[in-house]
Length: 524
Image (cartoon, rainbow, N blue to C red; front, side, top):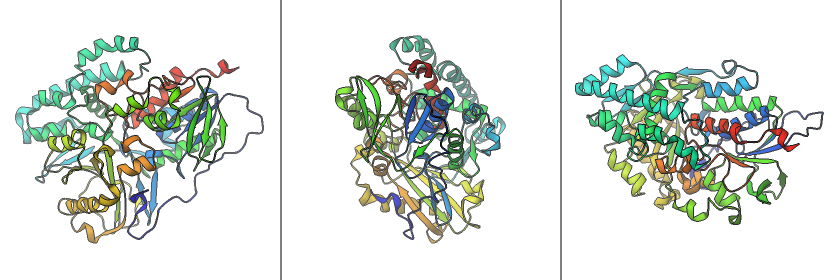
């Protein structure tokens, strides 16, 4: 392990033991088929809820000491740090899980609409507040580049077209066969899905600053705007319709409430229980082996672990005809992430909840990250300040932050144990010189995570933050299927499987199980 647990005062963070790992035992012997779910990220939790409602007995296994996976929560020095996802869109997908359990999300999770969604700060100090307020957006565009006002309107029309063709009509297609791809071809052609999102934006928007504002979204799911399919322009429409939300208590509060739903449904979760092998017998997943050498038999296995890691490290090669070691190694993987979590003993009231602090380069930096696999000296940052909305996430008078830098995955060969602290210091200096004056003298809690930690701690192949990069050739049928192509009774959910990364897509991957997992009666 590298610097994942480093902190200013040496405190290792961790949890207060508040997670109930085993619900009350049933007094009646349950003979329903057993589904073992590996991992308690959003995909695993949603899958467990849906399978439980479907009639399965469910056993969840988690490598870490608490739930969440990439949405793990660090508590340190009185500060609460969301480890990963912080932007909540399509809240109705979360609400569905509560509805399935006969409850209302609003009684458990307090989501707040962000306004603006994001502030994009350019290297020259100017900024753009991105929202779904058309009047505000058009006013800001007109101040920067009047000729792009109509271009923005045209871009939104293109986004709406991708929303209808890509999300409404294809979003829940499991893409299990080439026939599914053939049926989708007319929609893909209408969207010109072979084009990049940056290319689509550049067709309508001329000013370089506005091109960045309208094309940066794929970076939040590990993709390069210059190569990710323009289908992802539908994100503009998703955000315009349903907004961008944040949860009071942080994203971890959503995880906590989903765990409570499972507890109420008598679904046990075992922590500190790494799965080291999915046992395959007669071509089907028969259960899992743990690091402790314990074997848990199962009727079906659902992996919320990284798909490449699942195939490469949990399933013996002789059982993999599609996802061979060679195919896995040849994939184009998403970026890595360097995330610095820090707390300050003062508040920075001018900094909004979500902010992009851009460096001097855009295309060149992305080229270094995704093509050259080189760690550059310059960077752009996503700065997350949840205490702008929820002061309870820090001690009184303090602020909680994380600064996320998109970096190359481990293909770069970067020795993060050697350079991690130096990189953190560079980020601190850049923030101090831009939006957080006197930062270094006010930091009272600190820790960071690197792509090496994603590999070592989260078992993410190549330390990639989001599995395969979401380019067209690695989307839909070409992405790991929710029903394994190699092993019967094995299913995959999460960012690295269909349909892709981001909290909404991950929740949709769990919903897709309802199309492919057999009815419990078939096991009778």
